[in-house]
Length: 83
Image: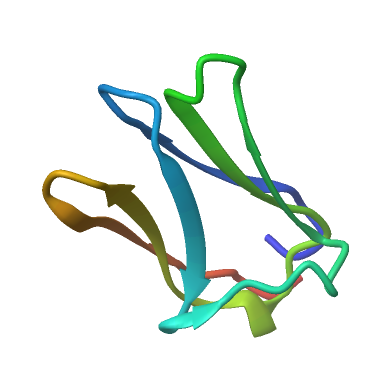
């Protein structure tokens, strides 16, 4: 539902850098509703979207940079129902 908070989480086996995209475009830090974070070990990465709206519908991807194997991805689709 609109105006709620949604979190996407990815867990990796080794500390890695993770970048998030929406519809293949990098998620910018300009929109304060989107917050990417990781735990201390850098094994658990979360994208939190607050005050979600139907404009946030789409495909979100976590891009995991693995120096040995290249970029691997995990994808989720978010569908927000209007209020």
